[in-house]
Length: 631
Image 1: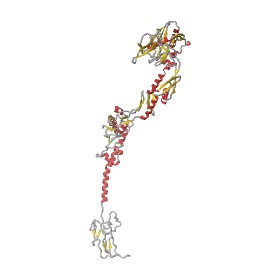
Image 2: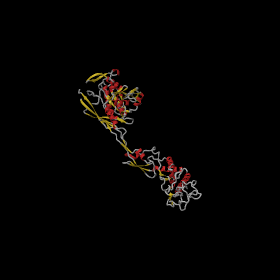
Image 3: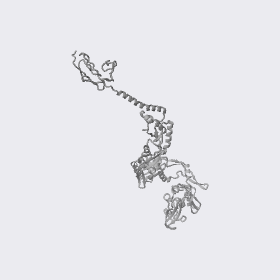
């Protein structure tokens, strides 16, 4: 064993004790006389109430309650700061701590305060069941505590009021007013009802009690959405903007006598319905408050740029310089591009822009070129019941069949010099039906010339009259005597008779037919019909009107008459042994009258003036010339 130190130091208090001296926590350590050096020294650490173990504390220890194992309270040695022993040493005394108990009480009070409203809310929530959360407002209308049926009724009332809500649209340079109803705005009743019913579920659990009873921060008014508005949008901007809404103008071309020119497109401007729709609020606080929105008007460019039309203008100018030969069956005629280019237009309706020519323009030119092919089935007229009726001719292939107009236009655009087009069959019956619509109703002009009886020339007059009787001159058609009768021959019933050939009096087959030509000339003269080709005799013959007559000689000397009326004209000659008469049957239209003559007799040059009166346009004059040699 190590030798005992004569003196020990208290490691807790720093006090020094002599051998045999006791140091006890809670009492002054006082040495007892008679103690020995090897008497053990007991040291007690400061008491920690939380770690105190009464089972290990020595019973009867100084400072302890006898038999308890717990520190004594009170007494001279008790206190928070410890005591001083007889030798001036200070001994630390334990301090009893009370804060955990106080904290527990405080926590309990807080929990009770929280639990009371939560329990009350739970009870209220159980009682209200599926009703709307308290303090909920919909567009300014309190709906808290309502069941689903009551809420639906409120929403439906608001839906009925909404159409009258004013909508003010500010489009910058334009302002106009409308209503929600006019703009197609509506409420989805089912969706809005569901949104309000579910509003309570969206409030955090810890906020629900305060939302249910608190008045300092009530639940904000619940705006409702109109999810069906965009899909049911009814654009009204066109009517609202009036003349402020300008549609874009597509580029095109303008055709004049000088050619085709590009007309540039122009931008439009409008208040787009989608812009207005996007600017509308997605919810409302109050249906009685006007809705004001600001939008920008949309500049709308043409759908086709100018650059896409410019090549078509060049194409039209090229067409004006072309001529295409059109063949339809046995018919052949020419179409000049210059005559139809005024019908050229830009088509923008299908895909890329393309050049077209109006069908009616092409059709008109086809009709003009087909004048020689009028009455293709060869309809004639005969006398019946005091009037004239059509007689069927024959079937004929005519221009033009389906697709002909398109083929002609394509040929002109492509620069093709010739094109064959489809024909169609016109039946003899169709020809009769067509002729029946031409208005051949009555005599509109008539002229008679006398002659001596029983001469060879009279036979020729009667023969040519019989050949021409019943001939139809269709509207727009030019009739030619030589084309219809051909060369006058004995095979056709003509005989030799006196005639003037190259200024000489000779006998010739067909001599005397000039009297029929003179009679027809005068009938046409007084009917006001154009007479584009005629020739007067080289010397005046007294049985004919002075300077108002015509002669014939095949093939160079012809008489042509053009029908410029909207009706058909039928030539109806009659004769006696001493005269020939030519009637023209039609519907009254124009009337010709001789209104002047440079002289009334004798040889030399003579000019006869005619005035034509029309029912639908101003009067016109034309002149006819004769140059009689002196004999």
